[in-house]
Each structure stands twice: as C-alpha cells, then as structure tokens.
Amino acid sequence: MDFSGFDISVGIFVLLAILIILAGVKQIPQGNDYTVERFGKYTRTLSPGLNLIIPFIDRIGHKLNMMEQVLDVPTQEVITRDNATVSADGVMFFQILDAAQAAYEVRNLEHALLNLTMTNIRSVMGSMDLDELLSKRDEINTRLLRVVDTAASPWGIKVTRIEIKDINPPLDLVEAMGRQMKAERLKRASILEAEGQRQSEILKAEGDKQAQILEAEGEKEAAFRAAEARERAAEAEAKATQMVSEAIDKGNSQAINYFVAQKYVEALGQIASANNQKVIMLPLEATTLLGSLGGIGEISKDLFGKDNKGAGGGSGSVPVSGTRTKPVSGS
Image 1 (cartoon, rainbow, N blue to C red):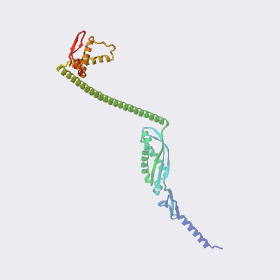
Image 2 (image 1 turned 135 degrees about the vertical axis):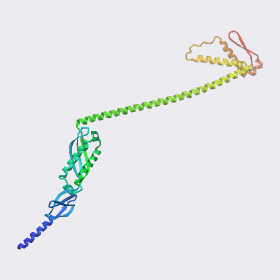
Image 3 (image 1 turned 30 degrees about the horizontal axis):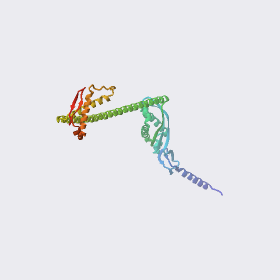
Image 4 (image 1 turned 45 degrees about the vertical axis):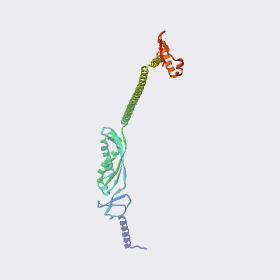
C-alpha cells in the first residue's frame, strides 16, 4: 500500500495533535499541589486529580507536598541566662497551606524553616535559667511554636508542633547538679526529722500535761474524800463524846471508864503497829488499864447480866494505880 505525501502529512498532524493534548493533560497525585506558570509568571495552582494546561504556553512551576512533614533540628550549643552551656536538639512538624506562597515567597523552604527554628531555640532557651530549662519543656515548646508559626505564616506554612528532644548539660555540670540534689534531699530529710522530733516533743509534753491534770484531779478527789471521811469521823467522835457526857450527867460513871479504856487501847495499838517501834514499853501504872477494863466488864454486866442483879448485886471495886482500889458503882 502506497502512501501519498498528503497521507503522511495528515498522519504527522494527528500524531502532533495527540502529543499536544497529552502535554496539556496533567494528573496530580493526592496530597500534592502543582503551580502553573505562563511565560514564567504564576497563574494558578493545580489540585489533585486530572487538570488541563495550555501546552508550550503553560508549564509546571513547583511540585509541592501538601501533607504534614517532619523536619529534624540538629544539635546545637545554647548558653542559658545563668551562663550554663547545654546542647539541645528537636523536631518540627509543619504543613503547607498555600502552595503559591510556599513556592514564591521563600527560596529553599526547608532550609529557611530549619534556620528559623534553630535561631528561636537559642533565643528562647537562652532567656531561661538552667533549672527552668530542665523543668519547663512544655513552656519552651509552646513559646517556640508561637514564635516560629508567626514568622512562617507569610510563607503559607502552618507549624503544627515543635518538640525539644534532648537537653544535655556538660558532664561536670551534671555531677554538680547531682551533688546539689543530694544536698537538697539531705536538707529536706533533716528538716523532716527535726519536724518529727518537734512533733514528738509536743505530743509528749501534751501527754505529761494531761497526766498531771488527771493526777491533780485525782489528788483533789482523794483529798475531798479524805476530808469527808475525817468530817464523818469527827462527827461520830463528837456524837460519842456527847453520849458519854450525857451518861456522866445522868450519874453513869461507867461510861467514862469505857471511853477512857477505848482510847487507851487505841493508843497502845498505834504504838505497837509503828514501823520504827521495835520495843514496846508499857506504862508504869499498868493497873490503870486493868481498872478501865474492869469498868468495861461492869458495863457488859449491866447490859447482858440484869437477871443476876438481885443475886449478885452490890458494888465492885477496880484496883487503881498501885495498891489502892477505886470503887465502881453498879448501875
């Protein structure tokens, strides 16, 4: 089959048309945006999917990843406010929100973000003391995120998170911090021990005070009971004395003999029961006690032997003091 020049021309034209159409069709993958430039000037942004451009007039300028990306921040030396040198590194998460700004507002986006983050790390951490640096990482992360996100917003970038990974003080500083921590813990232990001792002394003093109060109350109660007992004994003694006096007034002399003999016997009992009494010396006039006992016998005879009064009535005698006897009248 022979092809004429016209057929060949048509075939070439169709092939060129197909190539031109294919050159104008752009398939954008998910998570990416492409910028379109016409004669070197930005015109529009192609979103994911099938897009058409004008071949040989429009071209793809930048291919940008619109997903959240991670950027490692290398280790750098930081001097704190109290002149301590530490090394710190971190990680940064960011996302491109505007492809045109990210493509045309800054050159080498990742390098710019990295330098911006490192500079602000030195600025934020350098404004803090070492103790604050080690104990307030959340505050450092928050301050870094706020500063870097504000600075990167004109580039169409949203900084979602900045985290400080490691903060490493020098070895000698770590040893000094360890000694300081040990001393602080020993100090707290001493304070707690002193507080415990103080509390123990307070509780002991309170216990002694309460014991003394209870002892004083007991002594007070005992003294009250003893006074009450002495009062009752005195009342009984007074009543007995009154009864003896009344008996004497009525002419009953045997009552006085009984009263004197009772007191005499009680006195001898107290002498005999004394702790320091080893030898008991009887009175010289021991017959007086016998006379008193005789009086007691006469009283018992009057009380229990009235039936024998007629047969054996009469007066008896009690020997008193030596060879003399004192008559004792019957009732």
